[in-house]
Image 1 (cartoon, rainbow, N blue to C red):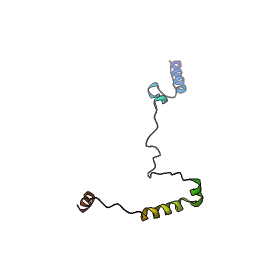
Image 2 (image 1 turned 180 degrees about the vertical axis):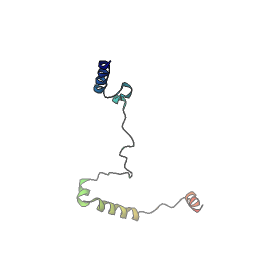
Image 3 (image 1 turned 135 degrees about the vertical axis):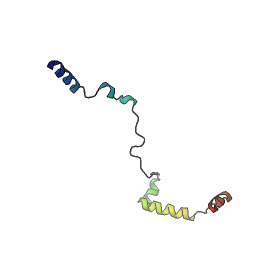
Image 4 (image 1 turned 60 degrees about the horizontal axis):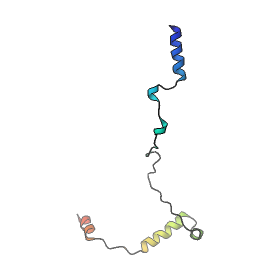
Amino acid sequence: MTKLRATKTRKRASDDLLPEYRFDYSKARPNRFANCPKERVLVVMIDPEVAKVFTTPESVNGVLRAVVNAMPRAPKSKAAIRRKAQ
C-alpha cells in the first residue's frame, strides 16, 4: 500500500497541472484591456523640411494652436444655442 501512494505522488509531481486545468494557448486572444493608455496619443508624420524648422513637439503644438485660434469659427446652430440655454 505504501508503494501505491508513492507512485501516485511521483506521477502527480511530474505532472504539474491536472488535466482540467490545462490551457489551450491556440485559442488565446490578447487582452484588450491590458496597458490601455488613459490618454489617447496621436502621432502625425511631418515632412522632413518641416521637421528641420520645428525641432520639438512644443514648437509644433505652439504653431498649431496659433493657427487654430486664428481660424474663423463657424456660427453656432440654433439647436446648439437652445440646448445650452436649457
